[in-house]
Length: 266
Image (tube, rainbow, N blue to C red):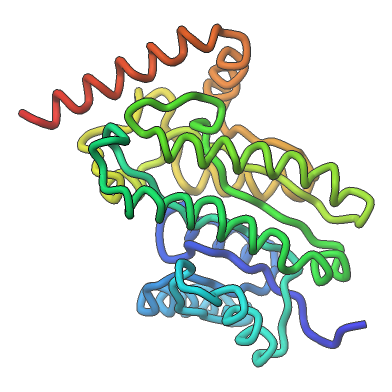
């Protein structure tokens, strides 16, 4: 039995969907621990949440890519008298471009954050998630349903997130741990700028706000829904992706990414 208080651990909590998820969990009364590199943004968000009358979130300013980051998070949580009830793996990034032309070190960094770190954090706190009847929310993407020429490494990492999390949904069920993978379509956040995208990520009809995505993810996790695709249109697209021939999907994605690269040269 542990005397540590339960918190919701959220990575990538300094912007975009991570901020929206933090607000969503706080709105439902959950104590938080926020993780990202930018301490100023985390403290700003923690102050905002505390001003609403709930406990100020624990702020953990660290780079998840550093060796030992998970142990650092664990030690800081323990020092604050806390342990995860819910783990929300939101941190991640991608790059636009042909894989052979992009920087290899940066592409390996995508794999490290989107796959290795997510896997480590998904498994590091199983005992505390079980103790507190909590859960795991991994933020994937609709990209995980598709092959991704033009963003090959990013799409592949999100395919891993989808497969891995769906498997954990089954494996963790006997422990009473909820597990959900959240697969949003395009969301207007800093992701596009980091990825090197100019203009929209996809047709506007697929775009949703970070707040709508966070609400869908929270609701899906609490219901222990295995896979959540926010938005009716995105749900229909995800269904179509599962039915359409892989060759057709490859040509479709390749064509869109090729047009985007050509437009960015002008």
